[in-house]
Image 1 (cartoon, rainbow over the protein chains, first blue to last red):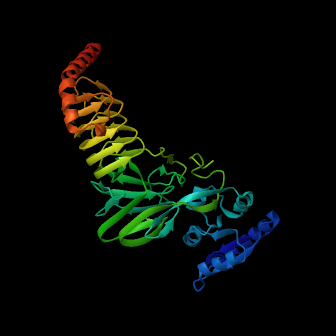
Image 2: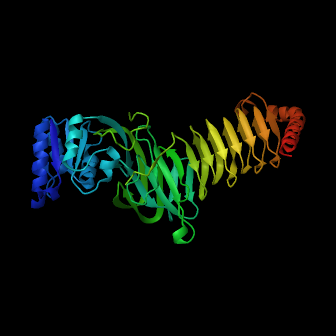
Image 3: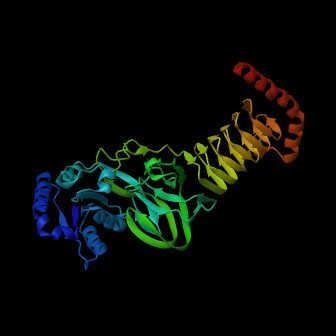
Length: 256
Length: 151
């Protein structure tokens, strides 16, 4: 059974036409199912648990990347397949997973091409794409054996697939290999118009702890967290997700 | 958003300029160093040390090409290549060694099949005393040959 979780913003009257199109398409494809709507006073976990008790096999986030992220937080490791219908003008997760924007995503759901992906954890919270932060005053301890330092500052991305920020390093990690990739990009030097992108360092790792004397901002799949110590590790094959053929990691081992 | 992105290598490690690694660094894949490493560096596969790299560590790998500075002992299972810009301050062990003209090697050379971990320090010292002279001549001949071909 399919269980669709609609984001709160879809209650807006301007979304009524899109939702009607979506529901018609799901019916045409024979994959209609239970519907719940996110609400500030409604527990997502309770809604998902109730759906699982009633036989949910596929949980679908309908909304934007924040909706997908909320579902990921709860559903990773539950054994349920997760799908995504992105109804926002742009979506980093949709691009990562090879899912078209809008109602066309229903066809991807119906085709039901799935992969079991590794997911990262930062202080116990799941992330699918990456965790990024400024390296200033942050010390990185990797695997409990060695320390990493960006001598002149820069940006650190701990990637499971790829960082979602617009200025993120141009690197794609393998979400099947049981490893995260630490990508360290030194701060660009020289006058602004002539600044080139410095070559980033890339280290496959399983666990890294980022420590700072003060609380610093981390961006977990684009969502800001503040912490003084961030423990980042990996959960192997924790998320079974519906993907499209144009997914970013299609050429990677296990991704075919 | 991601259209221009490159796909990463399969488990390869790159330590680029501007990055310092301190501690015991162990890798199962190929390792490319352009930055700084302090402690120890061990990989089950190949190692490439760029000309701007500085390594203050004992190094172990299957094959290696060194163009930068290494201060520590270097144990290579198969082939070690020292580029003309390389500076080694430590003992070297490898099955095959090539040295380009201009390379600086300040330490003992041990060549043979036995891995460093398997031989005791005294055995290694004995082996170095008995083979270093012959190897120095071998290295010298190779350097002369490379100089001749360059001319």
